[in-house]
Length: 163
Image (tube, rainbow, N blue to C red; front, side, top):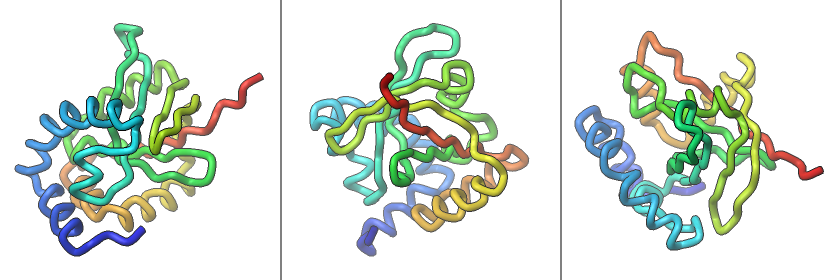
């Protein structure tokens, strides 16, 4: 995927600690309605950065209610890879706890929706996906440094085949 120099600049700025703090608290509130309204084809985050944004709908670990989260994703053939960077914070994002408790989820993007089951990437595939993620968005390397000593989870969501 080619990204313009302007979008690369926005990505670099978004990876800084002050701006990622602000974006973590604002972008999801803007992107959720935009994504629903556009049938999961448009988000402000994607428009600003050129990054692929999906909507994860998982079940709350404690509440049992549906939780909708816009996330950057690697789309790999039939499956989706999520990087649980949490903008470089010291704790895992809540959606990781939700998926660990209830691994079945829905992913929506580009006008499509599907049912998926989460598994954590094995060590060798985590390394491969991590390299792809950093190539897609260099901010992940900064997030990894800020999050240390936390290891950022890499989650693979595989499609659930209807029976």
